[in-house]
Image (cartoon, rainbow, N blue to C red; front, side, top):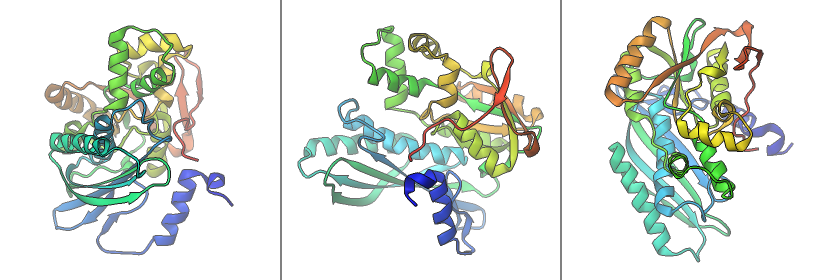
Length: 335
């Protein structure tokens, strides 16, 4: 059996079973955005780790080291945001080719430090090794969250509404423009979508507000793509779902550029990854409270895009023409 035969999440499940040992300090282990660990009676420690591998996650010729430093940290902070937490400390492990310019590594750390400062965290250590080929960046972020405010993937209930912050599909369309430079689009639209892909901004304040409202029941960040990430949430919560494609929030730039690709913008929103928006669930009575509290403070829109169903009802997508089709995970997969 090969890694490619079982896939990323099949492999994670097998490894989780191997290390599953009861420990009083582990509130949530492998299987959510972040590990939740008890270090105090009313405060929990959050721990997350993510990698950026050259040729898989980034192309050196299209992203500056400063941008990469910011992004490598931002995607981890997004996981902390999905728990309603606050990032505190950062560890960075690098594997580098020995002929890489020192100035490149320094610029990477300038971006890492800038993003850490922006979110109120500190870079406190890490590791360095020689890579025989490309660049490998591994970031660990520690954070905290109040015990009674943490949000997991597993709390969604039938009857809940499905909501997202911001707009979807922007990052995937930005990547499409990078890979297809021959496409001619308005300069403002190109600049906006490239920034959404190259320097994402995690919804940290929004995540805290959602958690502190105590109206949300489950939350996840959109990293692999909406279709994949809502399925993670459904699997953890043991529920079904119905999404309405015509309600997906789309930026004006996404609508413009999607028209050049031959695919409707809602498809980019459904399958494109790396938006790092938050997808969460709440009872219908809590939706206006969340929309008011989050949008009034952050100006980030909150949009209802679906509803949670009993597990037996399945997973469905309502297309813009009203046709209902099965919803499947169509986002990023490593293997």
